[in-house]
Length: 212
Image (tube, rainbow, N blue to C red; front, side, top):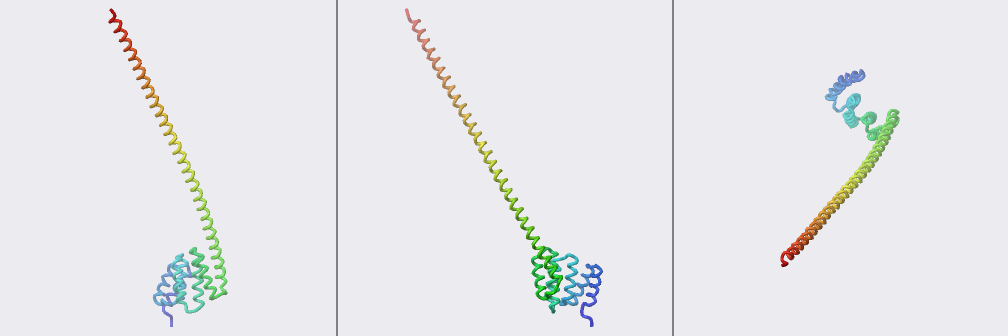
């Protein structure tokens, strides 16, 4: 007797091998409807999603396959495939964790050891890139800080020059005002002197006129 979903799963495998991953996925989806607890169908579906570069969905499917697996080999395969998917998704930390779990079940997997090295290198490269980015950010912040300080210094100098100009203008205005007041006082004094002279002349003229 054929197991539920057998024909659909076989059709999916044939399409998978021929490179028709979309068609294979449709067949594996149909097989899963008939055999929702079959870890092998779940694994096949996860591998097809991986080929379609739908890494997040593939990882979830491999998690499901691991939970459905009834043998160590299936569990190890699900963990290994999940780790490989995490590498492709750019998550080396999760990849290392999954592959180590797979190796703990089946230590003799050469492919798993190879991918473990890849994941470790990827993680090191990411950390190096993060360090470089952090250093660049620090240098950029320091440069921006220096620019801000120079701008602030320039603003302060400009403000000081403006205040100095205003003070010089006030002093000049005050000098002009003082000079005007002084000239006005001199003019008033001169007018008073002229008035006194005129009065003296009038008195003299009056005296001359009254003399018999």
